[in-house]
Length: 407
Image (cartoon, rainbow, N blue to C red; front, side, top):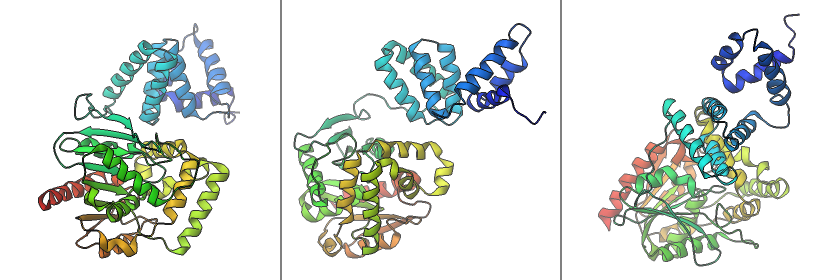
């Protein structure tokens, strides 16, 4: 009989999974004749009948509890569940977004208390994020272009230094660069933007080409008025960078091309068509897991599960229409025969474990751009700026000094 679980056993398993053994042991082992029936009641009904229901996963239920206890000002319960969620590996980004949503529906005072409690927990757990003071320089200013289609732009950094533009990968947005932009902003003015069809930028009704995306980059720089710039692109962003240096050379002072290609073989185009059809039929959920696996290699995903989950969340929020259109544009990339026209210092970065934009593709680019340098990061696959951030930043900082000296 001891091998058979009843509702209490099943509820206790869920309760431990969510709150941790220490809290559950304290509540159950410390029960008395006065409150034992109550502990039995909540374990069977709350933790088995509700937390054991199949309709929602535990992470979603955790976030709902945070929102509801925040709205009801049940701060003891909020602190218990928030601490358990953090220790249980719920991404801080999703907890933050839950509290931000609560600021609207529960009120700013409730959100202020919730953020304070959460910050205290993070400090206690040794997980307090890096400072991000809202002062001139570190503070990120968000704008949209005046020209159409409107693109979301983020500006930060110093007034002096080398103007730098960061151009993100397919399916992501300007937040891909958050950490790097903060670091570069200590010494340089930095601009990031969302490509059309991505993030906070407009999603055009009609199809668009890579040339259209190159022209987008050009008008962003012209509206900023800080060109020529060091243009840093990764994946799709680096395809745009190549076109910018070829078609609008007056706007470019230096070029960083990370995890990209100048041309796909015909065999790869079949896979692109299949991806486009999958997104049109099933939305971003049809490809999100596959893209995460291509962007972050397995060892990195295992070591940084919260980062992988945050990446998946960004992909799921991306417009399926915009993504499919961008896939069509990217599939047709064909700069290889024109790269000898690039006349600015160029750094090409590849990931040794990148299956989509291989080191061989990077070498083909470096061989055709006069004076280009090639660096291969051994522990990176596609999203090298997140898989090997220290190495990526080191290479970029050294290249910035080279560009400044050659100006």
